[in-house]
Image (cartoon, rainbow, N blue to C red; front, side, top):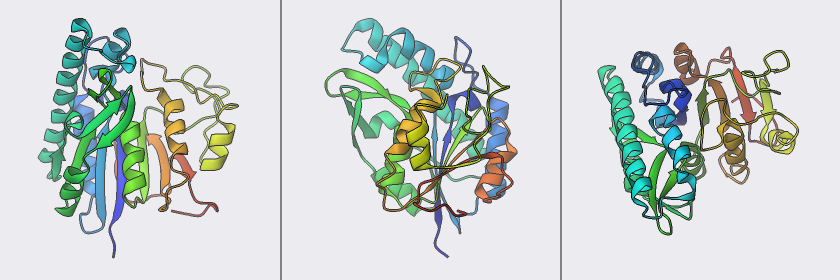
Length: 282
């Protein structure tokens, strides 16, 4: 049996209190996520890449100092970049330790050591550390980060961008985005819950064409990478991917959902975005 690659993105609102002005990791929930992944992860049938967002480790500071437009060597902005990286490293280490406690073979890869932007746009990456980890049945752990920028000194690289990069370059079965809601809605479930209807399945073509009419919207907390709307824009780049993964958006604040995901349990409440021309079960 060939192994199936799952790419799971931990949203910042799942693993931190994203509404907090200071960095507040959700350590108990991170450990619960690791426990549920450990219950279902089978290295004989799964490859797994985990990428996490920054949440309160970085978004508020990045917004305050406008780091999506780069640091440009400014002393104050450079100090903010260092603070964000310190927080992200701490968060990444918390996740890695939770995985290790649950006997998951995690391998930490610091995003700023392998990626480069140019004027805020992702340009280069060294994929070898991820390929080596997968070859040894390990779980590469990366993050959204502040990375070197060849024009702006440093700028923001979203974890969503990394997800779509690996889905384009490595045959992928499922890309799963752990959010703080059950999936993609017709309206914002946080601000307009009575009108918001969960889309349980939609094609990539449909979601791209209707994104301007649907209230996919920005995150309800501080998010310099565009929230759900930013994810939908990233999804569009998968249209030309030869190996068509299924994209799943699910509620990562419910820890058991991670084991349901890896078991490909179709009772999982979520949105499934079908990248193939014809819809069928993944």
